[in-house]
Length: 417
Ligand SMILES: [Zn+2]
Image (tube, rainbow, N blue to C red):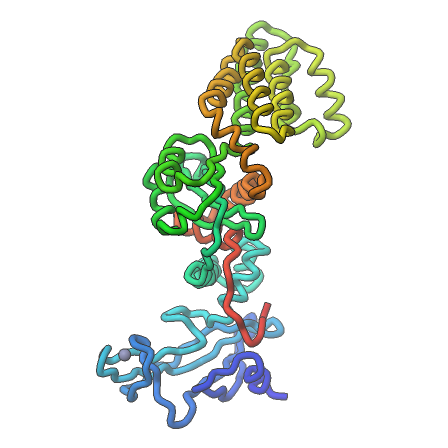
């Protein structure tokens, strides 16, 4: 069987035929060239308007990198025709194996993009002897196609989150669809301002924004404002994950302060290396950590009192009735406000100030996938952390859409991946 025969099976182009296949001598890894020719009597298609037009001239032969075979790099080589288009002028013809001026064939770009979901871009570049930029270009292409073909119908629930990047100096706003039937990263915007979220609603459109039923977010002020204005009909829920994150942060603060105090008094550092013990759920601790936590809890420390308040607050989420949950919330807040633990009191004041939004959690119960924002948050942070190569916001956006966007892909006659 000839390589041409295989190619005609996996990647056939209507108006083009495969020609000679030959080695390029002296290259490592070895390179295979596959010639492409226009079918006899066919006319080139204008890349401007998409119609076939009379020929003008031919450009020098170019290589388009294709999916590698048996450890060999493969290039389709072709001398593009230029057409004389009465509408667009002299134009290079459309070539169905490549997009615009892209040096990779579309098939190879999708192949690399698929690998880039499993490995870091750097690893993909190394594995296939490509540059980092080439891998980025491939992923960019896949993301652009996926975003252009996104189905945004039937969205009912959104989760809004923000993460820091570039060593915490900059923020991005992430908007997730959190419906039970479809969970994905829907939209990304630079910063976390009123303008950022307004852009998201503009992208979504008025009709779809007004079809939303639930929105889960943090109580970040600009978000509250925009949500009330653009999707006032939706039940706005202060997200469990964000509330618990505020409590975690408060404990961290109490602990840091107390460590300083204890050190100043020259007391034994009971609090060193306890951060994770206090932040993790007790059921997720190892046996050894359990022992250390039990030991720590015997001390009458501010940190311990904060920890107990946080653990007590976990009971809040077990309620089903907003009424009883509300009673619990009020009692918890009263107790915390008497605690003299300033960071904890701040959280209590925040919860009290947004009482209705907090209780919406119970009004919306079961209507959206509740743990999902937290799961996405972890994955998004992982993507940004792996992303030391992403110097630009655009690259970060491409990476996040690629890993979390659940983007559609075109239907291929043959899947190379
Ligand atoms: Zn044209």
